[in-house]
Image 1 (tube, rainbow, N blue to C red):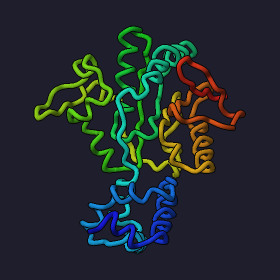
Image 2 (image 1 turned 90 degrees about the vertical axis):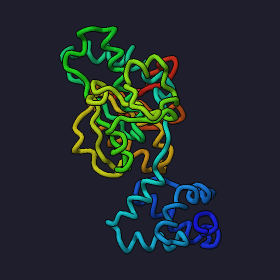
Image 3 (image 1 turned 30 degrees about the vertical axis):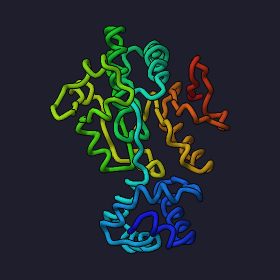
Image 4 (image 1 turned 180 degrees about the horizontal axis):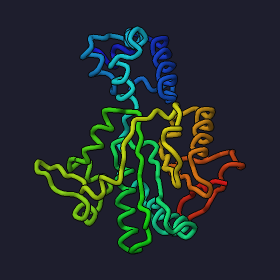
Length: 282
């Protein structure tokens, strides 16, 4: 057997090598007690490639740094399930506070949103649905439209996101029946496709958060939720500073419910929203 048994037999040295590889590749810091997580995510991949230990896996990736194996390993370790309209309040704050404020300052603006860790696509598509809901109750206010740029490290996940199709299990994670009927078309076989008007507002791009953001342009709003918790304090600060550089003056940053922006008082102002907290660019 591969996987968990292999991790035990290969020992702590091999696991430490893998931890170092993953942090360099995508910034994720694995705890010393995460052997089981690595095993569960890499077991099948290691078996398919006849790799028996983590040490052998790291050596294989180092010998072929641009090979498909490296990308498959990173995909497996960074793929996380998510929910539609996760935590609810960020999307309500977007509709009831942030959109009206930004449009009051510039009524004809084309607003740009960055979903910085789009995972399986629920967040950017939720943002697109929330935008449609705002338009329905504020007719004619979004004159310049809204563009949502969704990025993720996993190219395999991005390909799935672009199709805009989800099975009934994924649909059931946080999506109301009303939104399902309004924004999705049944495809048969228990699958549903997001309607074109919602899908075309979202542009998916591959991006490693450790790399440059220069090609993305400037944004009015950034959603970087439930991803910073995986990084070291130093990498987290670097990402937040570089996100700040992508935000227009007066723009907003949304973090996850369990994440906080400690420090950087010269860059962001905390805004209490009851419930929730968002951060405004100074």
